[in-house]
Structure formats: structure tokens, C-alpha cells
Image 1 (cartoon, one colour):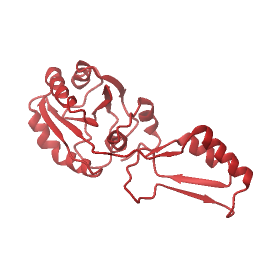
Image 2 (cartoon, helix red, strand yellow; image 1 turned 30 degrees about the vertical axis):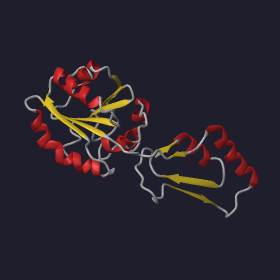
Image 3 (cartoon, helix red, strand yellow; image 1 turned 60 degrees about the vertical axis):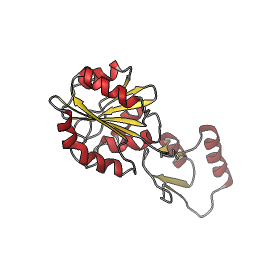
Image 4 (tube, helix red, strand yellow; image 1 turned 90 degrees about the horizontal axis):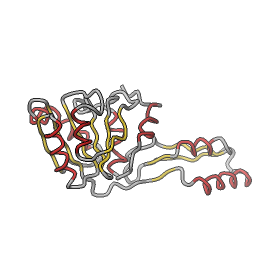
Length: 225
């Protein structure tokens, strides 16, 4: 679910009508309430209603529901010594995290964490054109110049964002190869507690292009633990 936060604020400041929504990027299932509209008194003056409708006509909808259709997820486990070590450490938590959103890992690889091996595995996963590739590493990269970032570049990826104003998950590194996002989030697969991956995974599963600016906007409410 996508929420136009600025438009929502504008509407809520305009008339005797107020709208409350679920958070932007929320995952919702059929029948779940995602917004409420209240007015006081029980009727809204015609001029106020016309003002609201005029804003919506000019700016577009406040809410957008993006369907998650046949989502596919690629997983890459990496470790400086053995990729299987990373898989053993993180696979159970990864399964729990994906199950929250009704999906499974469709394509899974593991490798030693050097840029050539990581790039080769990323290339294999990209061929399947998944909704997202999640990289679960036992190391914490210092930036795009480290192994995972270098591998993203080798496969032709463009870094969209390094660092997220979210705790846990501030070392997020996200790149796009064409329209496929590749996400590295060190430490986020050690625990099933909410972190930055839970915030950005729903729109990515719906094949929505999450931008660096939108990640920067996660800071308000980004203190998850």
C-alpha cells in the first residue's frame, strides 16, 4: 500500500473531514481496513467538500493498492569462508520473514564472499527476473566499495541508496539492475524482529520501484527497536 503523505496532510488541514491511514509501504490482505474517514458534524459543507475533491482531482489519489501477484524472491547467502555457513545461520529467520508476507524463497544460492563469486551468483539469480534479490551476509560492509557493492556494480547494477534512517537496518545497501532490486541489509537476517527489510519488502514484492528518497523518508518512525 502506498500513501501520499503530503497530500494526506493537505486534505487533513482543509476541511472538517479527517483521514487516517495505515503506514506507507504497509502489507495488507483482502478485507483488512487500511483507512478511515471521519467528519464532525455529520455533514460536510458543500464548499469544503468541493475543495477536497478539487485537491484530489489535481493531485491524484491518497492511497494506492499495489497487488502482489506471483511474487518471486532470490536469496544469496555469503560468508568470507563458506556461503553454506551463512545459509545455516540465516535460513530459518529468512523463512520466517518471508512468511509474514505470504511468500517463499524461489531461488537460493550461497557462495564465498569475494566480488567475483558474489557477482556470478547475482547474475544467475537475475536471469530468473525475481521481484527482489536479498543478500544475507555474515559481514557488515562499510559502503558500496566493499565486496557486495562491488559485485552489484559488476553485474551492471546502479546503487540507489546506502544507509537507511532505520534501526535496526541502517547499513542497508540497495541497487537496481534494470528493474530488479538487489538488497543487502547486514544484521537484519540474524533476528526475526522488525527491521528495515520489513519496511521495504512489501512494495518491492509488488514490483514498485522504491527510491533512495523514499528510503530517506523512513526516518520518521524508523526507530523500530
